Image 1 (tube, one colour):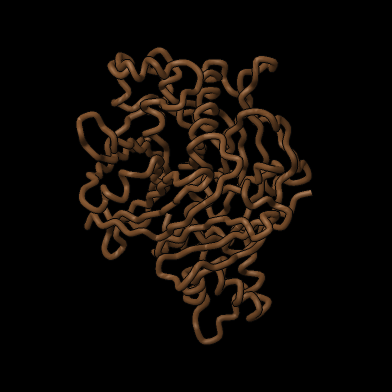
Image 2 (cartoon, rainbow, N blue to C red):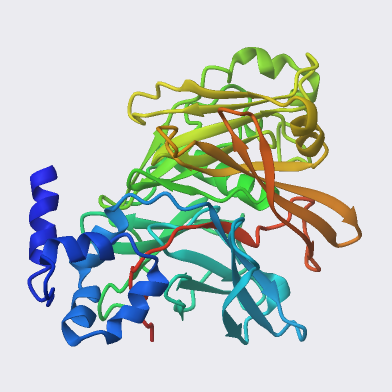
Length: 438
């Protein structure tokens, strides 16, 4: 594996005019520069401009380990509310940086669909249009996706990367109504897929045995704004247990980007038959309820490219104030294991216990050496009418220190639930191209 990566670096340096330094050394330096510098260095010479545009260099740039402070991407309406500004935010930076403006995109209805970028690309939704956008915030490239059908339906959409074809795919689950022939269906769009610039059904449809779980997952998204997550080549949706009369055999619905097929992941060990004996839980069975135990306090997240399930026990009946993060390294075995258990004490409890919504959106660092591992936590607190206080914190697993890196007040005029959509996500720099669409 290492020799293969070394050979790739040698091939990537063929057209570099290194002067007195070996080409391999120059490329190693370039791979560790921020995207802003790479874009500026395109004008150094034609050979460098050609090198930076190759898929090989883009892959090497993404694969090169970097340890920058966490960056956030967030969208904000302009003064006229008829366009949207896209900003980046870094705790160590002097101020928020305006990246670009999306004209004719309604700022109050714009949202970032997923909690983290997918290999450097972000998926945005203008809910008023409605229309999806794909953007690379680092290169300031953005494109609007083709229109889609089934506008007046509950849907859930995610962005993933097909490692086999090296293409990005946008996948939509659409929940049918009583007038539709299908309970739930799927369609996808391949970004940069060639002449067929259209939404299409996947190669493998939703198996009949998974239809009710997929429909429940879409209902969960519509009620609690829980987006899918991308990890290890697949998109994952959480299935709410409160929509079933017994513990469902599927806790998560997965969609493989290379195979374009659906499968499922079994329930974690704390989903037991005893929780169905709880009166509050039994009362929540049926249509999507205003509060669903085992759902509002649970959500999926990708950490270290593995699927994880966060269990929010801040209002535990036993008096504890705990966050648990469970992971499943091998989704085929369904072997969930407890990865982190965070006791919210002191100031941590004071800042994290009050918000109605708490979401772990990712992590930074690996815990080795100076790269200390930190959990990124987003919270939402309803203030007044359509105003919500949104904060993003980092939690150091070693020192148990909590740091607030973003605090903004948002207005959600078209709010349908008390869990508003997200206008920020974790930001990872990349040179991934954004293709223009018809």
